[in-house]
Length: 466
View: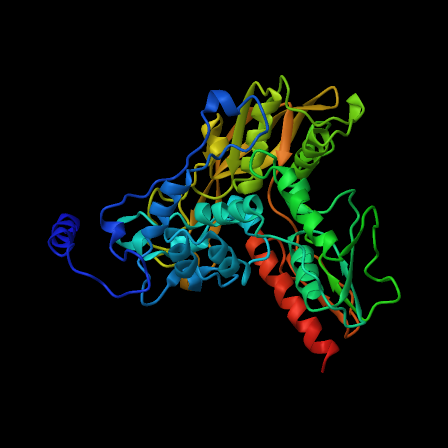
């Protein structure tokens, strides 16, 4: 069928089409081309970004593959409501500044999402459905942001103040988005954060090999030049908010990691994932830690408990630190490869995901529940796990886990717990206090946090002007 479409397109290629899109049939002749990763032997020895870039010509060709669908499911799937067909067309026509203006209408920080978003838009692209070859929307987004900074399209705005003040508590993606939007509306914005530098999860949770921290610093400088005040090393108690502000936006994230309270949890060498990830990022920023405080995989057998992105980040970091071996276990069963009937297009597919960190070396095991940690001289030396089975729940509800009695021991002298984060609980706030991002929803995606921060800014503006 696909060959028939190709042949038909060749016969009709001489016709002229009066459409906004530069080449609505480019997808028939131009294959998807990803920039790809740096070679493993090269990237495994440093913390520079693993993803490469395409040149401008190839990037324009990739943008031309967008079909300008009658119903743009990419737009539907994006939590920010990005206008993908419009900025793809602008790239294809070489109008990079226009592309950035279109993208910036809906996304405050495309340089972040263009690097770390799981690209819900691509999973709902019609070309994903028809030929499993969606437009490279995420990479194109990153290319637009880099062109905008490189060519000077991003300049500090001169903003007229309205005389009102708003405090944003938390400098993660939600807080930064809320601050940026409120600042643009004329409010004097002060951002408080407990850490030494802004960014939240972007800076202290995501490894440098996925998001180089000067990318964050570059954006923060623009925000400061536009008048946003950052007060770092300020651990604000949300029950005692600082005085002098007309409204508050709580964007403190979901800081409490899920623990694993099984026998042996008190042994040394068992850490929440962010203990390692945040420390490594701080070390790369120039901080030093006493030897006894280091969470390092050097010369160790590492076990990562949890199969999500945080677990993947632990794998990449462990390999770079010099781990002897890395094993990742997940309590859920292995997802299907390629396609999953339970999550059909245009839903986000729950399928087996192999990240750049997985490629660098690790063993992956599924359907394993942790029974207890084993120790020697007060230090962890292994983990006893049990194979489990999952059976469908009644009326398509939550599946039930059944122990099988098949027990084994995995050797490990460093265990990293990457099982997600608990949804925060908040006190009853006053009506001028708004909550956004993971602080409101529980742990989720950066793109959703940005969308939530933008909505909170709109709600605050409506409240203060009602």
